[in-house]
Image (cartoon, rainbow, N blue to C red; front, side, top):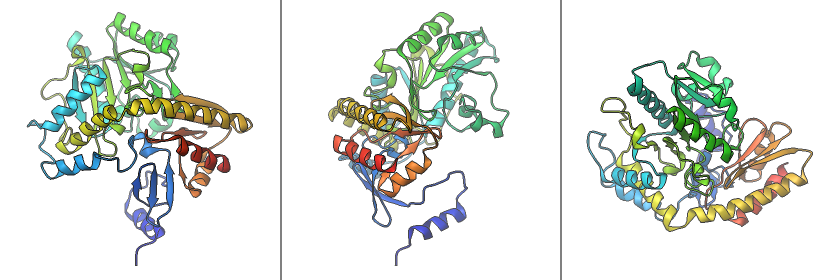
Length: 395
């Protein structure tokens, strides 16, 4: 006799560290836009593992590429070369307009590498070790000590002080607030082109262009965190490409592996300050995850994923606008672009998300009052209609 969901959850709670308030379902498998729990219940997936499953579940050809590499070679360490890592690096640097890449296991590790890169760049410039970085309020870059230090939310930080020093926080989309913090010690400015965890706030074109000009004038590195908003989610491969404002360093993860643990930080040649011994990763860039990432990049191009995101994103925006207009007493704002959008409510959205899950729809919040919409990029209009119907019932 198979275990019930409650039995499995009880086993998990007895051994797992309680750092998540998990929903009380045990997911078993997925197909396309849908997930299924161990009891066979079906859920429309509108969070994609927090923007990870860009191609949904069991996308044709992807599993085959992973299985093929699994039978050949899984790990080598970075003391040797492997073909999938080279292929992925070539494709990724080309579409990102970057020159160099370092593969990591996650987004937060990519942020750590970007911070080290910026500090080493400034150290090589003047030999000083007291440089400063500017990050944004309401940002989120990860939970390791370095990434936490540049995350602009005291709630995440307060129990883990002291963090790394020399970090100042400016107001997102407020260029003057950034300029007010710049000194001759500033080595980098870090931001998400679309703030995700902080509530789905897209950067304005004038803000990004102003930052680029400021960094050029002051020899400051501009770092874009594309971990959540990148890999096609805005309708461009990377969110900054909507405005053509190129960073010096950028980070990517999540959808790069569509479920396999891979991240990366990329840079222009001028910012490539890290040398042998400065940084490393035992698993980073291993053949298995890079075989997946290489295939994913091919699928994006061959199956015209970006064109589909533009079309589906416009439809999602229109439908969410209509929903907001029908519930003006409960929904106060609608923000976002492409397939990263958010609805801000007058109060906590947890109960709405729970009711939606009970009706077969998986959503996720961003801050307490905002529902975040991060469906797989393969979402169709019929899925959006189904989501709107369930969400409206849940509201």
